Length: 165
Length: 213
Image (cartoon, rainbow over all chains, first blue to last red; front, side):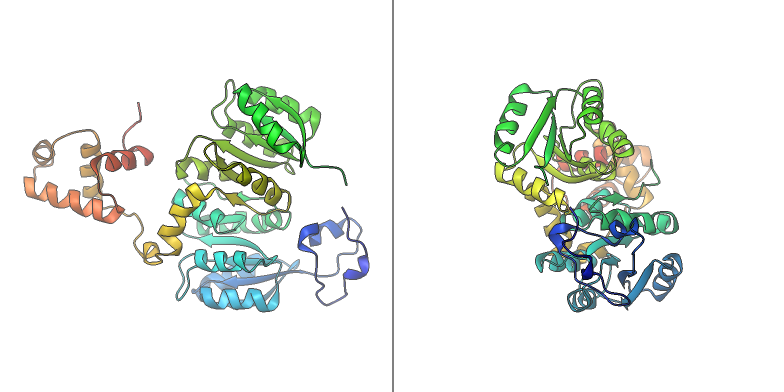
């Protein structure tokens, strides 16, 4: 299925894409007309993590907002309509799982990828239950995050391997 | 665009037949296989959009079949439908590439919802499992601040309790007072939010401290 008109894509700006069509930026890629970057909102209460993630996300991404708690994450996603939210779990005011659930309930099209230190399998199930598609552990950040985001944009799940396996 | 094509994998023929009946008004059921090896073969030949699979299947189990399918056909949406209600197994299923996880005790409407969500790139976890997670992490955010971190001594005590040893015996082995063992036991139960001995055993089993056999 392709979008009815490619004029939906605007140069240098952001165009709304119908969630039901599940058209991601990548799908325009083979036509050589990819004009906009993948717009990302980051949520983590540690500035070092935000800085590290910015460093890992290459040119194809644009970090449009970085916030430090779950409440701000929900507001940013609702206001900015990003392609992806990359969020921590343990954060002040509203944790990442609560934020994800609120975003899911608001029917936002943003794909959610968790980035967390938690390796406990219950957190994985909680994250997927809250509407996330990606679950990346901070230990595997540099290896897994970009892949997990691409998978999420295609509507696929991705969960980092544990150190036990 | 054609109808969404679904391949079923379950070693219980009646279940397959029931699922096909449930799905067919909305989707095209392209086949039903009864083991993991047959699943890989059929998926390669039939190229379904969605695979609905069980975990416990002969020859090759559903988790391993899913891992292999994901490598061979990364675009296929994998939906587990199983009797395994343990979140530990559910997490493994997601790690193997599942986009949805349902139980055989789930309502039929959930299956249609899960397929609907899956083809749109939205994950689905049956409320039978997600509700417990929601209670633990979403409605009680403090649960995040008390991760299940037991001390070394607590883990020793837990393992022996789960092995069925008495508190007296544990006290003897660890060379500590009987009341200290009791103290550890209640701290462990408090830490894990567990109230019964059988749940202690289950916890130890799930975390590989004792084997299920």
